[in-house]
Image 1 (cartoon, rainbow, N blue to C red):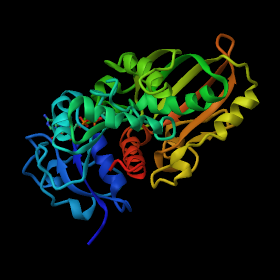
Image 2 (cartoon, rainbow, N blue to C red; image 1 turned 60 degrees about the vertical axis):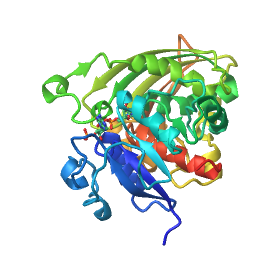
Image 3 (tube, helix red, strand yellow; image 1 turned 90 degrees about the vertical axis):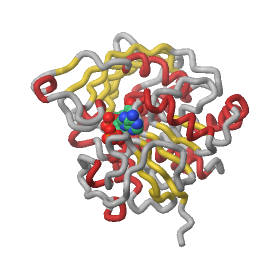
Length: 345
Ligand SMILES: NC(=O)c1ccc[n+]([C@@H]2O[C@H](COP(=O)([O-])OP(=O)(O)OC[C@H]3O[C@@H](n4cnc5c(N)ncnc54)[C@H](OP(=O)(O)O)[C@@H]3O)[C@@H](O)[C@H]2O)c1
């Protein structure tokens, strides 16, 4: 007999779904009791349905678990969703209406004003939208979302700087990994020896999500973000170059100190997936690098390097975060741990 919360994975066979399964192996509070994907996978055992791409093996207890369709008839306490946004649009409200908590990666509901868009270190109080959402939509369950994989990495240092010096403007150029495009990802003939200068819908997300997360409940922060997003031939880990304007002038040393000392509720509450330090500050001018830094703190830290003054805005830096861990599955899992800690699960 176990008192762990039972969790179902929606989109269990995809890039993010596989990460969920990997991260939930031996989790002290949650255990997977349902795996769901498309009609094409339903009815197969998990190992038949999936093209497994994680570095670790499929957990023994899930290999022969039969994959279900994404309908809210599951023996679970809540679901983690890694569905494509068009599927999430139909499936996630059906689960919320049926009384399930849905902790989602999909972009579909992120910008709805009654839906929390949360990073536990940044805006844990936005879960106060849950009762409002339930009242407006008449749901017994609810939907909570995490941001786009670029936004997660961006919002952590921005939060540290916004609290200390007030952010006035952000310019970001991204170099995003192949796995960010889901499986199978861009074909080799397109991505080998190349940089792809456009990722559909990405810049709009990066230009709007940070203000919701760094703002007050239903009142976004007022700074503007300008984003240029590219896809590069890296397996995992999104690299971002940032230029940031600050209202209160600060020295580079003060800025570094604020970044290095940043922490939040997950660290104080010692949530299981929380990194001890959410921001790893590097003084090495050759860091961060995807290959060397994406797995810092088991993929849950953002590595920040090359912090220096900027001749146009106030400060510039390079940051790196693991897109399917801190930017997706780990982000949703930490949200679920926070919601359990806050009494919502
Ligand atoms: N990859 C990232 O770095 C990343 C980061 C942040 C957020 N996200 C978001 O997370 C979500 C999943 O992304 P991904 O990269 O994991 O995508 P993916 O690799 O393409 O996986 C999609 C998953 O959804 C399932 N699915 C597809 N069509 C379905 C349908 N009609 N009904 C039910 N299930 C269906 C697939 O099952 P089958 O195998 O049966 O087709 C698969 O399990 C997306 O909303 C994405 O935007 C991804």
